[in-house]
Image (cartoon, rainbow, N blue to C red):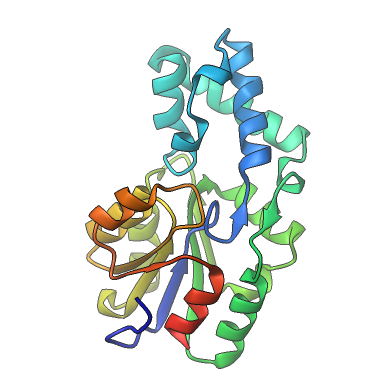
Length: 216
């Protein structure tokens, strides 16, 4: 799909799997945390845990009673290992962000289920923070994508009919739908293409360049 039927003012990007391939650092962090709790990470599909909040993942992986401990350990390992540096931007995404920013047509934001301080660290490390007017991530008060999006939109008084979410997983699509905003799904990230298609985004993009063609 290569044309949008309406114009948007607010473009809201997911981060992991949409802008940045963070899987090496995230998988390493999860593996170390799970090892601490005696869980063999090779038996877990870790791709399913990029997108949901850490509380959801670790409740499933180590149990509710150990979830808080696992989250704190995850944050510590991620920071101590400089996991933000163990990632790479998708080919072409910087050009996309630069051209969208300089078009003057959009307010641009990040809405991520990544712990917000880690998202900010990653944006700084990759020198792309200047492209975004707002960065919202997971905090103690919000975790699921629907919650992050709702706070971003409500805090800034945005018209939902002018908002467009761009993300790579069902969490992004479902979170956008829960907030009554349109969503474009990218297929080069962590989500499964067939699942994304069934979730009915308004468009699918197989590369960052297709995002640019869609919006400009």
